Length: 386
Ligand SMILES: Cc1ncc(COP(=O)(O)O)c(C=O)c1O
Image (tube, rainbow, N blue to C red):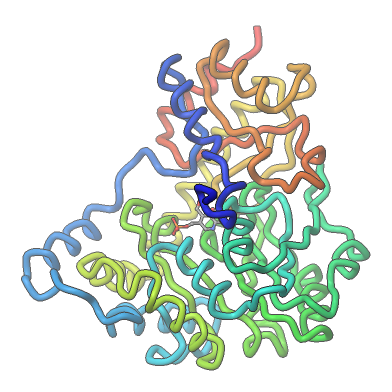
């Protein structure tokens, strides 16, 4: 008997565990994991507490999500993207975007199918594809500006391609794909009859002139796209693990079938609070964006002072920084060096790459700037050269 099952035998412990431990030992400022070190807005927390105290939200929620949250998700899509989502049949509330992506793969991809993954990628995609007995096919983004080669993208499509996972704004590169790039992806998906699983958890985190364009809004794409998002990023509430998948009822039906036997239903009181939060006026979204624009500036100044180079992120709260001017070694060695010598932790990007393309990430480490301004100023002081 082989223990563990072959399905999971290749999955290692994530690099985050080692980095967090090392960061603690050296009292380093931890810019590794993408979790805010500041709190969820208090009015949203109050709604959670009130829902829990009201008594009627402490038992199982409806499997697809509460009616109020599904309506709020549909209203949000209409308000920001002019998308027409059916709150009854076009939305599933999941345990974070992580479960949403997994349920989408399980519900829409068959064993033996191929799923195109743009890399560097969020680390759950590939294990999810493997657990569905499907095969990942990789398309790399090329530094320094993290763009894909249209020929490499086209070559990734085959008769077996069933789905493509598209993350924009993209973790870890910080890219926000342009309309032109999205049109290219959309054209190939239509030509090859491929479903898009659009991971848009950073949809409101865009900077300067970048514009987040959901691929579902492109002509011919709504019918073949499920869009995944998360309250974790938007309301600085990663611990609540509330996410959702929305799209055309025909595809959402597949996601719902998987979801009902993965988690069935997710945390009930949090859904009431997130329904309130999604309905907040535009001012909330504008302030949120402005807050991160400031944090990005602090982060980039720290990198400038520390001798790193980078392509300024157009979105997300991550930046891939090129350390080759200040350190000679692998990303993991550089991360250990920064923790020990500078007291600042980041993440080596190995975990975001297939073996096939691991060398593309050499020379880079990822910093997360979802941290207090005070911490980012300390980072600036610690990283300054000379
Ligand atoms: C690109 C991307 N997708 C999905 C997730 C997972 O989101 P959640 O915490 O809602 O499961 C993350 C979290 O970091 C992410 O960066």
